Amino acid sequence: MVSPNELVLVCTGRDVARAAGRGFAVLHLCLGITPAGALQRLQLPTAQARCLLGLCDSPRGLAACDPARLAADLTFEARRTGAPGVFADLEHDTPHSHALLAACDAALHEAKIPFYVPLSCGRALPHAVLTASTALSGGSLTAYLAGLRSTYGAARVAAFLQPVSQDLTMPSTSADGTTLTPDEREALLARTGSQPFFSRELCAKYFTYTDDAGRAHFVLYDDLTTIEAKFAQLRACGVPTVFALFPDVSPLLELP
Image 1 (tube, rainbow, N blue to C red):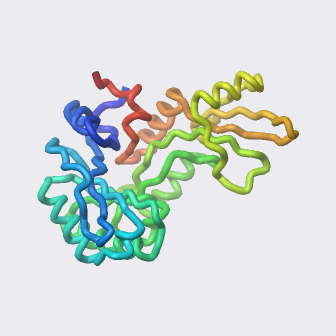
Image 2: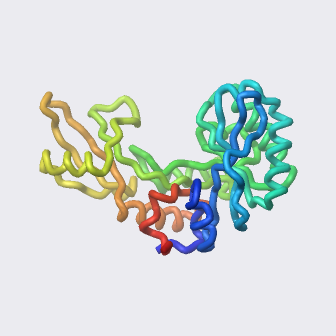
């Protein structure tokens, strides 16, 4: 089982109070950006302690916002609610998002409030904590994290525990394949009679099969055992902050 001081649960709705009430740190995705570029409360921030504020983006809002003004408003909101940190859940990698991230990075650093951003859009920021996904399709998870910590410093690297379930046609020119639901994956295993194996490097399971057209496939996936193994590996690597979507890790938590 995972203790409350080892994980930050990403929640919405009723799950926020439920998880926070059991002592877990929570990332509440409760803030957004209006089409006019203003900070918007999507939900009322929970009154529970240890609740980080999550900021979601929108293309129109990013294009219309004044980065310095929105960063100041975000910092004010974090101070007002006593948030121990802010997470920018930005999906649009654009010059507008870069400008906003830079402004937020400076304002929150000055306010001594930790600022977490996805690794993919935060490499150029001087202060933010870069959040790396564990959903790798190649290489070694330990080596990947070690490289990031060597480049940016141990305190500036966090992890997002994201289960993977991908069907890749080989040879693959991309790390992204066809996403499979657990039921689809189990049906594929039953139909092909494939044998699953565990990859120590990726901390994930995999199997291979050949489709009706003679093409080779590589299926990489997580289940409860590999999620546990990944978390243990993150713990052993000394990653100070690990985020996880509440539904994905709920079997590991002692929540009624």
